[in-house]
Structure formats: structure tokens, C-alpha cells
Length: 130
Ligand code: FES
Figure 1 (cartoon, rainbow, N blue to C red):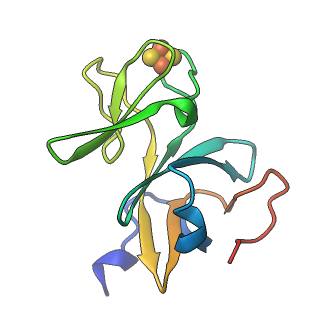
Figure 2 (figure 1 turned 90 degrees about the horizontal axis):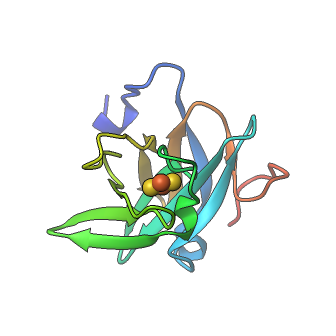
């Protein structure tokens, strides 16, 4: 079994989100998970994608409107409300609050994400964009 087949989060499965050439066109976009949770997909050139909850764990600030920062190779998002910074890979912050993050993986030029429910680039839940 390849390392990428492991699913550490019980009940999670891999979902196809879209063609990476389309997803690379924006540094951040909203992703909609079935059931209503809104996620944020961050793109950092040349080929890194990070998926997190879109609401800040502090006071629900819109992280998809935050600034992406890279410090010593670690990529973070700065919440636009109170400027807490969250590591986009681990979700950790110096505040002690932890942002929910989800694994991402590029396969065959498409981005796959490990989430508990199917995801879509639009609220209607239409299939992937390719
Ligand atoms: S709401 Fe994000 S830091 Fe306060």
C-alpha cells in the first residue's frame, strides 16, 4: 500500500476537486463541503495546495480573505480580523488555537483532497471542473 492510500482520519476519503491548472489561477478560493461547511483552498506557487476550514477558529474571521505568508519555508495564513497567523500545513498558531486542515494531493494533474464528505467548487455541489 502506498503512503498516499493511508487514511489517518477515520471516515475520511479522497475526493477529486479539479484540474490543477484551473485551481492555480487564484491564490485562494472557497470550497464547499456537502453538509454546508465552507473550506478555503490556498495555492502557493509552484505546486503547493492547502485546504482548511474557511472560518477562523478565533472568532470566525474569513480566512479566505487573509494574506498568505511564507516564513522559513512554512506557509501561513493571517486572519484579516485580528491578525492571528495559522500554519497552513498543521493548522497551529502561536495563540494555541488550531485551524482544521485537510490533506491534499496532486495526481494526474488533478487535485484530490481528504475530507469527511464530498467537496465542490460551487455551492450547488456540481462535479469537479476540468
Ligand atoms: S477572527 Fe481570526 S484572529 Fe480573530
